[in-house]
Image: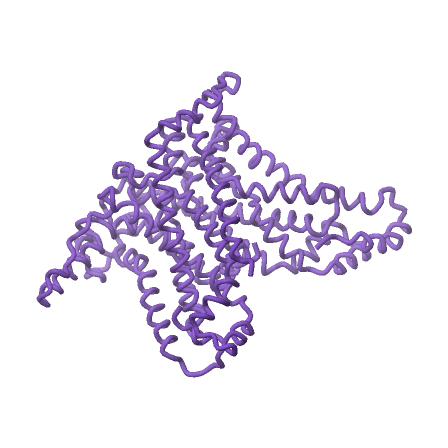
Length: 282
Length: 328
């Protein structure tokens, strides 16, 4: 409630409320970011320093990272995560927008019902699906495959919903004009529709990539062999084995977290836009 | 937007007549639509709807790899739930998690969003920092927190130690706080895990609230100010009611996410998942243990059905309760 005074008043010198807001926000930011700083700095400490609890290492060492990178399958897990998140993001961008487009721009019997059916799948929690998915996966030999890791996230309903919102904002005339000019139905979607919803695609794509990168429950179930683990699963099981070697665990955590943080700070605008779009408009 | 059929008709003579199409334009459009939807609908039918139905089905049968040999048990597993003390503990814990996480996120999220809305410089940076835990893998951050909570070597206890030393030197030893067991104590473990969840998901709430605040037209505040409303009154009579839809959304999202809590619980105490003494066990973790450690597929499915019903009920009740207040 601090800083409410600034509402409705013309811009002027910062008042006491604004100053307090800055102070509190700074303190909060330090608290929010501290675990990351602590983790990264600890990852640079040699084992004998790890329990000394100084913030900065006395001697900086790369040994923990070397250990994790060269003596575990971490690079492989990284590659797995890239492949799985990559497959799912390409699929999400194409299919969610195709379905979103079809549900807004094409008219056909059953359109409303199909939209409600797709939307209703949002009500079913992942926990309810993993057991049948696993039963299916053993039956069709999807265990320990990239397809097995990726299939649950190929066409999320929230993505369909998001892209539908975007296509709804486009004027009808545009597509009618294209039709008159003899553009095929797929061409209308691919060449007229898609370029106009690029901001939506960017938000959805990055948001989805990060979500898939962080997924834990399903990859934990379906990746039985160490070589097929994703970063979070590999990291968790490795840390379970490393037990109290906190320097190694912090190095593994840093390797799991820092790339996502970097991606986030680069694409911050699109990611936050994605949250706002799913949230406020949804 | 409802489609307007006359739009379509107007293009039809120009387009269809000269080329002599056999199919009418409307039929052609519908066929294209079904073609576009073919794969996605197969996905939803086979990988979303069928598994959901299958979960119900599995919960009514004794599990066997061969579907033909699964014997029908009816409500047996659901009756078993009534007397399963471990399930009751998981259920209580999950509701406790929600009782801590949801209000904490609502209050902190709204407070931080209000402050962010009041500052102009550095706002993007602050927003990014508060949001950053949300994009990081819960499995990894839980390990960091697990270490920070560690009894002998954790950051928190060394901070408490330093604090106690400081106040003792000042001559105020009664202000000192002894080291805490945190994750090792069945009473402290659940709030400790809940704190991690709040830390991680707070940024999501902040972003949603900030967007909501920025969507409130300035003229409402101007009008209230002209009428002599102070800052608190403007908050009470302008911000809160106009923000209500966003708050409903926020509470529903964080409740659902908390009911599904899994990653943090599993990773923060990896050698005793859900421990100590089951004090941090959540429904999702219990379901996972039943299905994938003990292979009680049928009973685990029944637990997921329970979770589904719980989420459905909570959503409906909250939509009801919270939307009533919006009628101004």
